[in-house]
Length: 159
Image (tube, rainbow, N blue to C red; front, side):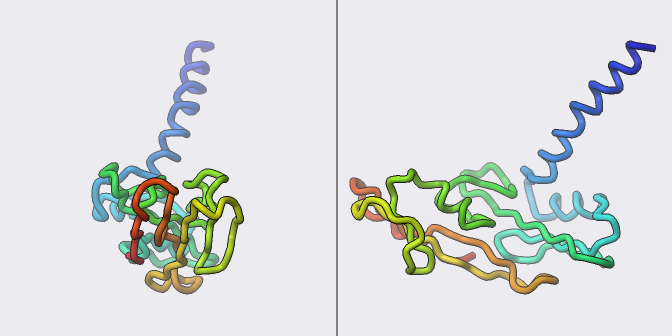
């Protein structure tokens, strides 16, 4: 009986992180991502899934909507909730700002966001995608940056 219970506890402990990891990616295509969410329970809530700000899946439901955003990672790692590259989108300002060391001055939509060295800077831009239950899906991109050594990175445009 002890072996059975220890096996059960181990299988639950191993399966739980795998489920969370799968929910955040990677997915090889928007079809695979939509198929994944078609089989997941969101407790009957309206479910809306976005990739690079564009709606790729919606399921009817009630109560507060479940809205999740993904990005097609520039490094080729697939579609993920978090990509960690200056070429990708971010769901939060802190995610975009966290890409740069604390020595970088960061501007958000042209306004100072974090003051540091005047020689190293990054410009973060707010972008808006398709409409969700809560309004336009918002995400952030690195519009441009300069590290003090290389030619200035011209940056990204909204997807």
